[in-house]
Length: 249
Length: 251
Image 1 (cartoon, rainbow over the protein chains, first blue to last red):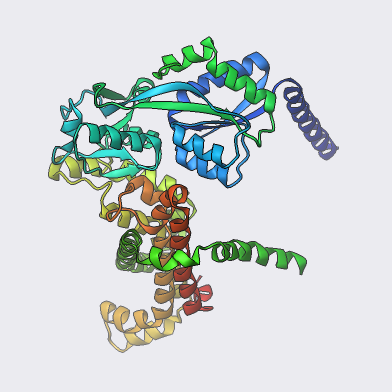
Image 2 (cartoon, one colour):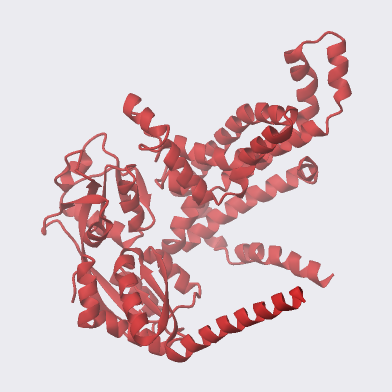
């Protein structure tokens, strides 16, 4: 008797779960977004708002842009791709993986991340070449790493990094954990972190990152993808991006 | 029978894919390129160093384990085998929290002596030792358990003291277990990625071991990544062929 009850209740729970999934399927479905790791705070907020509006469930894969590009080229299935530079988006376009032209939806700039209170007294890019400083950069294969190399070249500074992280949030983490004295990350990373301080890089040394977004050819939730991209470009979405430290278009 | 065939295929196909899709015409160039040589040299150095440390610390540990009983033994066993089941990245985070500049031990080392462990080759060796040493400990402990105690008893009855018994009787009898444990440990250390990249970071020549180099090259230079993978595959195959069935016995 107890066993039959257990089986019955299990079936009811499963049916309930299935019912719920079915319900969300009827409304907005499930959306898969591959996005550069620097977009996590902004996109999480955008998703929570959008999901509420259209009854969708958005799932993210946040990694270095170069890793995501590689995964998509290997056949990973996603609906939307948001990149931290135009080069990787162009790679996918040339591979015929986009369903249409991409659109730039945000900009970002670089900033030096230092520990709270700036104990090592870092004020310029040139300070990063000081002996004994533990500086962490993103690997040049990561957009943020490529931008950092450009900024350092503009400032005529040579840095000997302790590590080349594979996503820009890795740089932020190392500084926040106290393992690194400084790192070059995006302005948005510092705004949303709260655990590190930022040192501004002047415009003539800084680099403007262009973030494009596009729907993928393999998108299974086309309406959801269009809704997501539209929301990102809308005033509401742009406002969320700005609060997260990015610059709108 | 069909299921067994499927299982075999599951192992065979990825290896076949690696070999078939390899850019063989670029192989020689890639193998002799300075980046590959650097990564290979570093990987060999770190994995051998990790194995050496594992031998020095692991054999005594296995000895103590085999002589302990009850709950203490169970606790020690769990502790020493934990790195085997722990996800490597988690191991890396744990190492960071213990030996990083703000870590349990690391903060003292940093403040007192200015020693920074993360992002150094030493950190890569420590990461590899952490994940690979359990293999050696388990293998040696297994060997100790299957030892016939009469040899040691006879030696002691004949007047040999503790050290003498260990060095002249126990160790030689343990040689197969130590050998297979060391080889497994070395193979595991060679392939370590998650803990290395979290604790030691990524920098060519200093902490970019072959698995890390493969991961970095995968997006920008996939052909290089495939060649590096093949090198590791060749090394792993050599280990397996060299060991044949011996390591199974030790486990």
